[in-house]
Image (cartoon, rainbow, N blue to C red; front, side):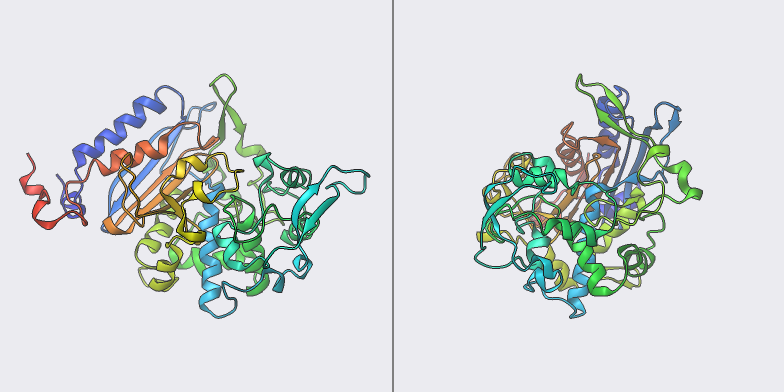
Length: 431
């Protein structure tokens, strides 16, 4: 056992099972062309594996510095940016969103209607009712805003989002155009009354721009990426790094893996005017690990102080109405809600609640999120654990990789921070 693994309280032999499992179950079978995993505990990078191919068609191996589509793993970064503005006193969590987007002052809640009658009325005609209170900034952070995503395909509001291309990261124009389009569509439900995965983080990104006076890419670069040393993260892949950009694959209708997007035809190949705070970033695994470690450290990494520890504590607390979990709070539109039994939502992340959940090893207060192309991370503050998983396959729920990695990582523990001291198995006592 190495000195680093001893300090981290993890077994290298058991972590080898993690490598073997994903190699034989997913990479060698072709289910995932390539996989990269990082496990860091107590500040020690104990496990880092890169396996398989970045480009199956070109037989190009996956490299440590591969650049991935982060998609919804952009959302936690946008949430941190918003909380930086909260710390500066430029915005409050209970500020009404219409303070910054005046067109949203009279947004109503959907009652009926929606089918377009005239060509110029492309989003449809709606009957609405006034919400009990306006949407607040906190609603955008915790997805209780009343907004939705078109891919939910549950309501006429979702249909209007699809007609307006609200979900896409390559829509024309800027986020100014996006929020103007959303002013034409009613809320799916009254703000603060339910949880619904939505375009809320895209609106947050727009607010970061409006409140800070800096475009989102400039704000991220100056206040997050540069201080944290995230040198390969951004809204597009520059030409000098393009050879490191991985293709994205998709699970086909027959269970086969097919090309979803090549680097040459990717929306991330060049700069765009639309900077999507909900899914517009690309980056490396090591960059995202630095972001996660900053959060695990309570808002700092090295000499960079991004947030106060009290702000990180606030962000990683459950903020769903009544302290409920996601399945108990959803309005029925999020098809993956059942995956989150015993899990609430904070200000940008899912958060494990103190409820009886015997089927999954995890600590209360752990927070996490993932992206559409099978990327995900989790941070376990109690165990000083940070884990990052990278692949490029849509959809993200094609395989139970989140639960499997978590099970294998926790099974490698030989020392727990939260287990009674007298019962801990010390590294020197292991047989």
